[in-house]
Amino acid sequence: MTIPRLEDLEAVDGARVLVRLDLNVPVAGGEVEDDLRIRAALPTLRWLLERVKVVAACSHLGKANGAPDPAYSLRPVAAALEKLLGRPVRFMPDCLGDDVGTAVAGARDGLLLLENLRFYPGEKANDPAFAGTLAAPFSHYVNDAFGTAHRAHASVVAVPALFPRGKRAAGRLMEAEVAALRRVVERPEQPFVAVVGGAKISTKTAPLEALLAKVATLAIGGGMANTFFLARGLEVGRSLVEPAMAATARDVMARAAARGVNLMLPEDVVVADDLDNPSRVAVTAPDAVPADMMIVDLGPTSRARYAEAVRGARTVFWNGPMGVFEKERFAAGTMAVAHAMAACDGFTVVGGGESVMAVHQAGVASQLSHVSTGGGASLQLVAGNPLPAVQALEVS
Image (cartoon, rainbow, N blue to C red):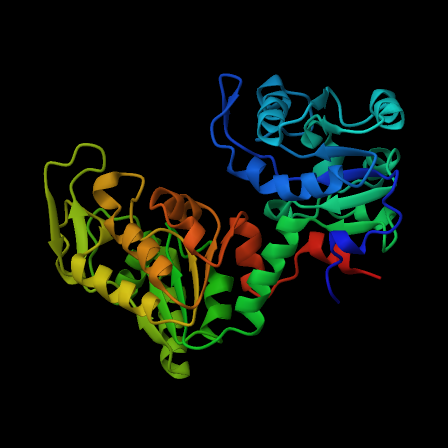
């Protein structure tokens, strides 16, 4: 089935729309530190505000766990949203209750932002009663929170089930995310290159297995490459490694060989004796890592190889940094992949998390085909697993 779009909404004149956004942004000292996810919501909000009577946005924030916590209030987000949107945003100090219903019923037009959904245990529990109360004041529902699409929570699963087709839809961001990632999964143009990094192989086993069936080249970097080195019998010094996942790494290598997939591992690595205040930094082969040092980045030869593979691809999917890129001295491998993505003429997708941060740091985000806002959701979709929030929108 196809995901319903904003244009598929019926009877929007005078509608009261509940829109689920992903406004889970970093907040410190009462100020939003990074407004990327807020800006990603603006196209959907502007489309709705031009056509409907009233829009109420809802979201979670931080690690609120079933009870009100001022540290995780969305009030600072309301101020940032108002500034970016250029119009008033009325903040509601609750997401349920008579005050919300009265505000929605009495509003002539405009935007409300409801308080953190996760102040109620019913949100994470996907509780039907919580969903019914949340949905009650509204005639329509829109989900634009791709970052939570892999969670079976009330606001993205139970709530849309209360709205018939024609009264629920995906927002602009959700629509773009699903289309881009389904293109990677279902009809990638070859050669398809996947670059997978980050700290641990244990968090990416299913995506790796799924990608092996589709890619021409699988390039491994970051801390997870160390586990592949260990699986080959190499010593990696003080490097981050998962000994319990060595058998999985060997299985991935065997499957790649059986399928004729070019599995790329670093040929040279940067090593250091300390992350914060290194006194020794060197480039070495993976089989010559000193016992008192750790692998922190791709070496120059590997950077060139990975960049060449990416530039020559017709489809690229990237998730996970190539090293400790948050330390500028050890960011060269990650930046090399980011710039190669920008130079690629094919369809290029970055799958959330630290990789998104990297392409923004490199200044190349606008040159890529798609930059996903949802790391966990994008990996689940690439792994071939359904997203509960998308399923909830697509049902007849």
